[in-house]
Length: 241
Image (cartoon, rainbow, N blue to C red; front, top):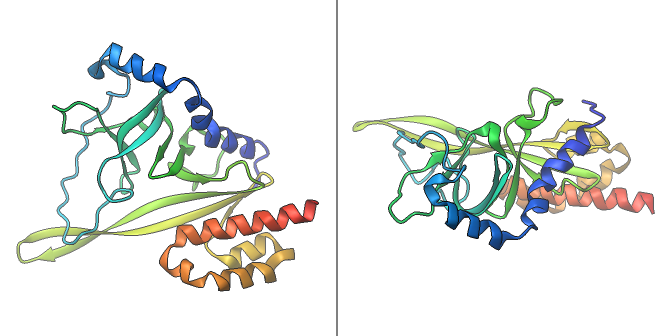
């Protein structure tokens, strides 16, 4: 799919947090303390709920399942060092206000959530883009959006019912969708064969490099696609020299 302004919009979203976070973070922290935790704009949304009982150690969240320190741009305001939790199953970012008396999470309103950094990953909200394909929506991890070939990763959690003698339980399995952005074009990219079709001049090299990294492809699909994106970017950069 061809969108002439798409690359610029993605780049703008991908860099939004890094640009704003370079401002005086101590000033934001001072402002938060002065205004008061309960009055912050981020304290705005429904209480997070997770009524599903799990049958194993799986969960519906990013990382280890608990709250992690992260940063978010919400309603145009950067919030640094917040307790965040990304509910992948619902595609919702959850915040727990830094208050010793608080144990509840709040579902942040998606339309106001521009981007966030969590678990050493940068996520952008593609629902904020006006011109985009229908399949490209929600939070995506943006990997090197400034590169000639940018990789966007959609994290998913499939919920599976488990009927036991003591009731209905659930378990969660991770799944991923990958999109490559190159010269204003968007490509659904699942493996090295798709990459070879996008870059036919490098098809053989891409397949060979994927074979070298075949163990990573099986054990860590997201890392594998990042490795391949880096490799293709290197190939393209060599062409332009």
